[in-house]
Image (tube, one colour):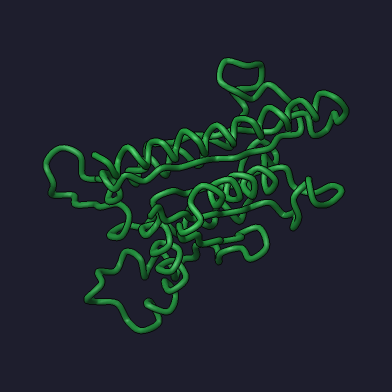
Length: 230
C-alpha cells in the first residue's frame, strides 16, 4: 500500500467545483485524492488541513526546545514540540505527499509556511554535526522513496518555467527547497491560472490542470506498481 498525506492550505474552506468563489488548489488536491482512491481503495490517506487549522508558528521557546539534545529536554520542551512531532510523524509515515497550495502575494499561505517550519527540524528530518567532515548537514528522509505533488492556483498567468512571471513565483521553490533539504526530491505538480481573469481563459486552465492531475495519478500509480514488482 501507498500511504498518502493530503495537505490543504487555502484560506477558502471549499473547492471551486463545489462552491462559488471556492479554492482552485483544493479542487485539484481533492481530484487527485479522489482519482487515487478509485485506483487504490485500500491505501490509507491522512488529511491535514492547515488552511482551516493552522499549525502554531515557530517561537523562541520552540527553537530553544528543538536545539536542546533530547536527553536534556525538560517537560515543557516536550510539550512545546508535541505538535511538531505529530506533523513530522505524519510526514515520515507518508509515501506520497499531496499539497494544495494557492499563491498568496507570490508566495505560500502563512499556515503552510508554519507547517514547513514545524517539519524542518534538526535531529528529526535533517541532521547536523559541526565535527562531521565535509557537509555538516544531511537529509534524514532521503532514500525513503517519498514522492511530492504540489497542486497550485494563481490569479495571473505565466508563472511556469520559462514564462513571463517565473522570476516572481515563490510558491513551488519555497516548498521544494526545504523538502529537498530533507531528502524529498521526487516532485511533480500542476497549477490553475487566470483566476482573476475568469471566462474561457480560466476554464481552459482548469481543464488543462485537471487533465494533468489525472495523468499524474496514472503515472505515479504505474511507478508505484513497478517499484513493488521490482
